[in-house]
Length: 125
Image 1 (cartoon, rainbow, N blue to C red):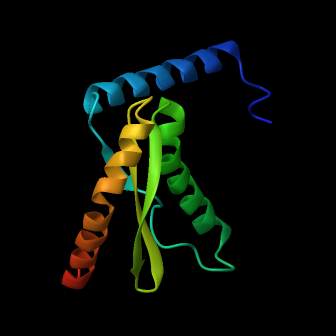
Image 2 (spheres, rainbow, N blue to C red; image 1 turned 90 degrees about the vertical axis):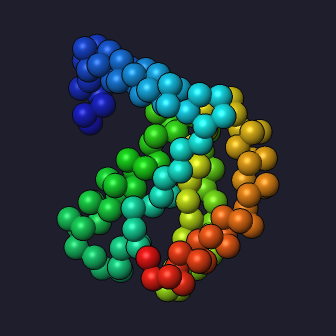
């Protein structure tokens, strides 16, 4: 319902923010930079979790997922294995149009990423 009540000023402000995000990420990453972020904000919520906790998790998850969508950049989620019985992954983000570069990068470094993740988990970090 809020989207239906949007004014031109609100839309203009959102579009300006979207443009600023894209410009900032373009400046940060350049042609060959990659931003690594968590795919999700933490362990999944438990069944029958209270609604406040669920909404907090959803908001945090959306903030991680929205970076690529809002900026127009490409994003890939790389599964790294299981830690304490739960799946773990990292998301990599690269500039708009760098899909092939990002896929090749993951293919070249996938085994190393998994090995390094295992080292970190074994060290207790």
